[in-house]
Length: 296
Image 1: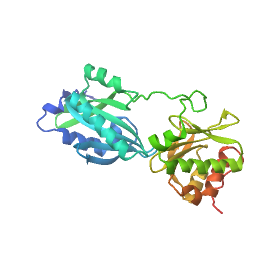
Image 2: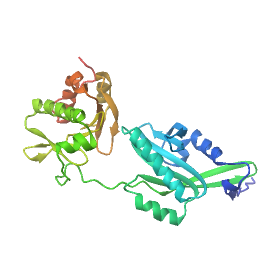
Image 3: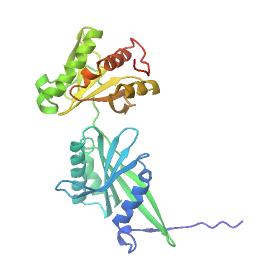
Image 4: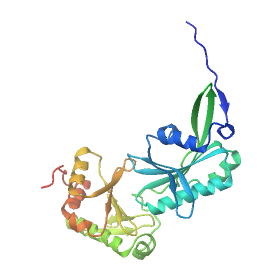
């Protein structure tokens, strides 16, 4: 049995007369998993940005609803490319705050100088750098992708720790949310108090938590935005719970498996319209009852 090894030639797509950036975008769009970021799906290609050009690729993780703003560059990374990538990421996260977002740069040559620059942003801006290598043998092309810089966020103190930067109610009403979305928090806390008296809101810089008898108990936390509030409730993931939430009509964003929380989006009026269902989820979170998948 004769087995012959094949040694493909390493090429630069930028210098190949048969290939260009549009070709590379199309390959990634056909199978976004080749980037090594998970089983992502394509949401858009050449996505028009207001007064800022076009985003090469918008990818999304269907499990976590996290979005990746991907910019592709042939040849070496440069300053204009990083600015454009960050700008597109910033525009998308502001337009769609209900998702988590990460900026992704894919380039043939991620230079050390470039890595030094973007490492200054990493932690403040969720940035991923991926180096592409292309190979050719006869009329076939091969692509490999290597993550050079992984996303790194600045760590937040655990929510159950009492050491958090505190703010006041007006901060959430004016800076992060609005009076209407903070009122949603009041309505849920009123429900909690009807089940277990003594809970009060605790206004932290990154979320509104709960305290009872001056002790933190964040079995549910809130992140008001301008038009809605994210309620993050600590519950084990299960098909029965997800069926219950779906039947109730509540809007579920996703499940945060790292922190064990369902993320539910509440618009003004949602608490009143779903009072019984929310109360049932709160009782379940405190271990007071098991939630049935059926709504009476």
